[in-house]
Every structure is written in C-alpha cells, then in structure tokens.
Length: 223
Image (tube, rainbow, N blue to C red; front, side, top):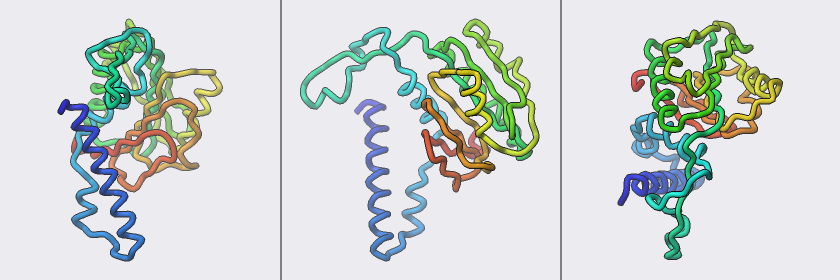
C-alpha cells in the first residue's frame, strides 16, 4: 500500500471505531477507558496540516499521471489528477490574546507554514494577529515569503473573539484559497462564520470543537 492508502485506511478504521463507540454508549455500556485512549492516537500534527493544504489547494492548471484519480480506479478507469504550480492567497489568523502560547509554539507553527509555502508557492500570505480585534495585519507577496518568519511581529494581548477575523475578511473583500486559525480555543462569541476552506489548529484544548471547517488538536509539548 502507498502511504496515502495507509492513511486513508487508518481514517476508515478510526471512523468505524468511533461509530461503534457511539452505538455502545447508546446501549448502555458507557464505553471504556481503553477505547477512549484508542480514539486519541498519537499523530504528528504536521501530517494532517500538510494534507489539508494539499487537498484544499490542489488546482487544475496541470495534469499528472504519477497520481491518478483514486475514485475511478475501482472501475478500472485511470485518469490523471490535477495540480497547480501556484495557488491563491492564504490567510493565517493567529490568536494573540491574553492566554499566550507556550514558548516555541509560534516559531514551530510558522516554520511548518513556511515549508508549506515553499511547496505550494501561494500568491501571497496574509497574517492576521488578533484578540478581540485585528491587532496587526501583515501581507507577504510571493517573492517575500522567504523573509516571513524573520520579519513577522506578533501583537495583541486582550480578550479572544475570532469573529474579528471573519469580519476583516468580509470588510476587505478578500477571497483566500484557505484560512488557517491558530488558537487555544477559549473563545468569546463562538466560532464565527466562514465562507472559505478553514483549518483550526487548536492548542492544548482537547475539549474545543469548532462548528465548521477542519480541526487539528495540538499539544505544546509536540511542537
């Protein structure tokens, strides 16, 4: 099996276990501690982080036979997949509220983001540091991405209301290809409304359950 097929099988097994656990709960068993531990596998956050970008930001500029479209293979039909050499704008919304991140978290996050940018070459990256408002907005064009990690300057320190990010995007009529939000998940006013592919990177808060988009739970110690 290829690495992608292995990951897909792992996701299917995990979903089957979860569904079984739900049924068991409804029939009164209440689940078990071993089952709960099984449902929390040790997965490097960087892997689903990269997968989100590769799936969300795949374009239709070029075709490749190196990775045929999987959904047609079962019918013995092989078609080329598509990809883009560059993608549109990415928005990083980074929570800089009073509940600050542990040392090393932001550098690790930015380093992984830079690695993604090296592969996908977005037209621009817009970083929005926020608490209850946008505290600082930075824009990096494609030719400036190499300096992003060294020049970015986080600002903030107030409360936590992620709707300010959604409002900023709407007010400035931005149309990003994807939005990534790094937060501890202790939000005032809910999870906001999003109209673009959104990835939540939630730090040290396993109980946080965003109501839209995809979610990656991260522990500071794993950064």
